[in-house]
Length: 214
Image (cartoon, rainbow, N blue to C red; front, side, top):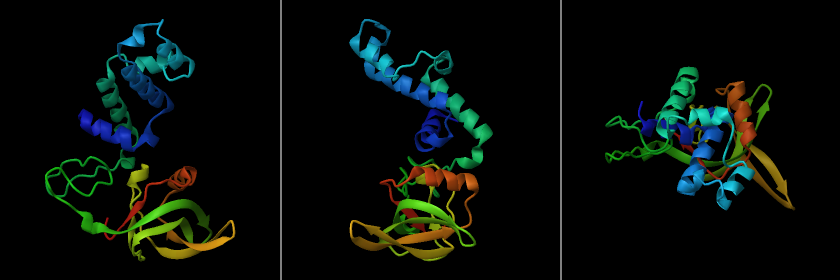
């Protein structure tokens, strides 16, 4: 596995990183931004970075980076692909097979496009479980039309799954005297761990694509 693939996983599936790995990435990023002043203990910028915890003195963190950042990336990906390979979605071009830049890209550098699979776009805001009816993602329809049998592309939020829309409901919302209806997309294809992760996200600005095929 090369570093391009490693960065794809690290950038788009950060939920699979350990706390120590995240600290190592931050340490490396700040070190790069400070350039060669990292070894200058008298530098005010370096002092501030250590005080705020942006730079790390933890041996466990520094040990991950001892062979350089590229090697660190490959080691992280080797761990992820050994422990939880099923949680990583590789968005490969249907024509040339090359890995796209992001899990939610719909075109390849070779020129191939697959935008036609997008049925609608949905702005996620919250989620909850209804006994006997399944797990519902609540939000707003941004564009298009959602039908039962479509698929919710959850790869942009770090989940390697596209659960089917089994039910469509409406949730009445109230805020400061205003009343409106949000969409509820019900599915039974998410396990408890995935449901908990989605609930922990809260609302986020990225719209989810609703697809007509997986």
